[in-house]
Amino acid sequence: MKQKQYTYTDCYNIAKECETPMEMHDRNESAYKAAIRNKWMDSFDWFTRKLHKPYTYEEVYNIARQYTKLLDFQKGSTSAYHKARRNGWLADYSWFIPHK
Image 1 (cartoon, helix red, strand yellow):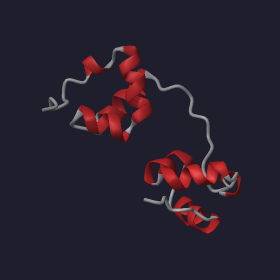
Image 2: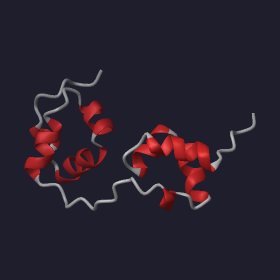
Image 3: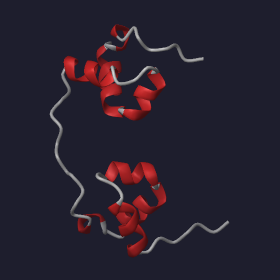
């Protein structure tokens, strides 16, 4: 099966619905890769390119409180989840419903 060839316009329209390059990647990885390959990403100047300072324990805790399932936390706030996992903070989040 032939893969869709994304044009600049295709990628632009997909990117316009996103706030960040990572969101574009998550929504449509093929369009994201086409934009990277063709060096179109710089023209999507609305993308927020802020560098996030490292999360504190309290910030990650408050983000985690927004979820009831660990898997949802992992998928919904990937970087906060990884920070919690790396630092051994997941054990502090006793409200998570066990994954079945």
